[in-house]
Length: 265
Image (tube, rainbow, N blue to C red; front, side, top):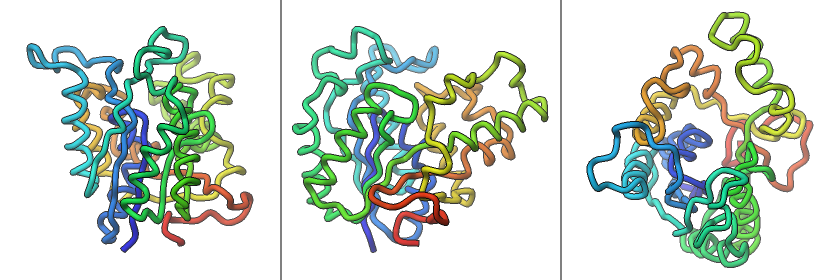
């Protein structure tokens, strides 16, 4: 049995970025630990979801615990920082904001968990946080430093395959799935998302665990509405979009055959 620690910025990020590898690891008998940096206080609330007097942070905490259960996590921890909001907003520098936190201090918090768990594998994000969100970028910096402090042997940057996104968007347009001219990210936006395929090291097929991945998304009802892109896609399109999880293994050469798992396969 190995231990996987997967580190994310906000509640719901875990199921989108790493839900498949989490459930796959748990089903294989490995220990899965979820660490979330913030409470997601500045997420966009799905209308009419919160109960009277309920805060978004309280709801998102509960949703994360349910998502973690679905994905097989044996332990869930929050580092206690505040959601920094989208790039360029005043909340980026707010009190307790993760994006403004001292990297060394935050890394020590995460490293303590890595040591307690004697973690074999850590996932965090690529150097631009997948799409530039300040908290996601900070996950990269904090994750990298925490792995150094704790001596975690296998470290993976969760990302998306930029070239695969282009292929999927072209296929969606050809199939008439609602990506007409001017819809979806343009080329400039795509260049800021994910990582080129040639720079990736690891391609994990998670199609056997897509049911759990989608159920974990449903658990985040305050953020992911039933009619959202994530849940409204037909099963075939959902599998094409979310059936592969991509990583860049730190310290490993690129350009060779893809690894197919996080535990040495």
